[in-house]
Amino acid sequence: MEDESLTQLLRDARDGDPAAGNRAYALIYRRLHTAARQQLRLRSERHATLTPTALVNEAWLKLSAAQYEIADREHYLAMASAAMRQIVVDAARARASGKRGGDAVHVTLNEEAGGDELDVGVLALEDALQRLEKLDARLAQVVQYRYFGGLTEDEIARLLGVTDRTVRRDWRKARAFLHAEIRGAS
Image (cartoon, rainbow, N blue to C red):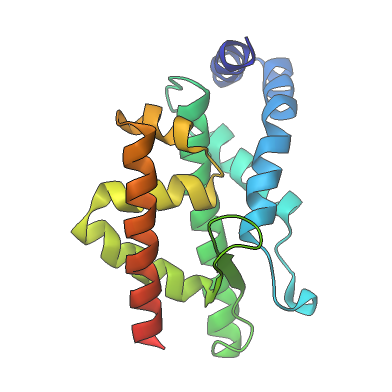
């Protein structure tokens, strides 16, 4: 029921109903905030100029202004993951250009909280992810959906039209590739 109501609310909001937009935002906010908080785990709070709340609000505004046809909840989350990725990377680039990399945001790419962690800069991750996109677009999509959007394996599988087992295998391959690329660039 929540999936269908969110999809309808997003369509109604796109068609100009501001009340529907507010209800859709309330439904999806917690999910997006959790994903934003996971990707913005910072090493140093003194550099925390981009908060999870700000990231969610920026992504919501970006997607609200776009005229996309929303297929369903997973489709919206996929678009939100792309928007959040772009916002995080743009913020990191702005800080890096202003401070020659001294204020670069660091994020943790991990399986689960407390899992195998590799501390990387956002820009290094973005560079590695772009290289992965050139080699295997689906692997890059799995990373984007899972890391930037916080989608589950089942949600990613439905979006990509594959099994959850394939998503798990793709996630392992993508993580291995990204770890090797980032370590090699260091």
